[in-house]
Length: 154
Image (cartoon, rainbow, N blue to C red; front, side, top):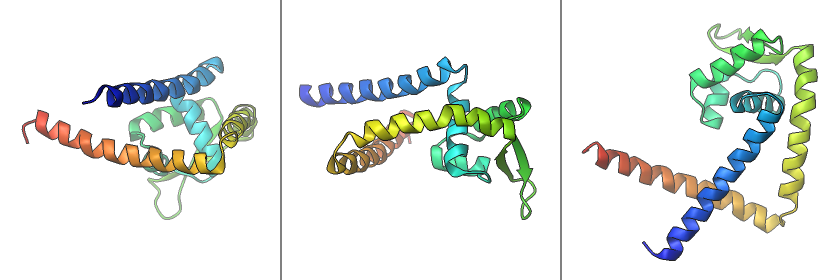
């Protein structure tokens, strides 16, 4: 592997870590776990009615991780888990009045920070960043699956 490739990978990984740390700091400064922040964020942007299953599928979370955050928010009186008509096992997430007020203080300022910072890129930079990030994730997933298989001797 070339030195340039190694340096670029290191910078990308450092940048990914820095982004994770930014969101962690935001959550921690509000006395929230990272997952709780993301559940509030997702429920806010999706609106009432999104489900645990949808969050897990779209955001690559395990069911247990999201369930813990949802139970915590439910215990605090911020959300209700409402069984769906067609499948009683599946529950929709709905904000309570208190939960909506709580999320209103937390999520819109974060969305604004994201939008302003992302908006400072040109349209072409934004399109390239999204496209290349998706491509990188897909390629890395495929290579990691190969690495796991070779480690396990498959």
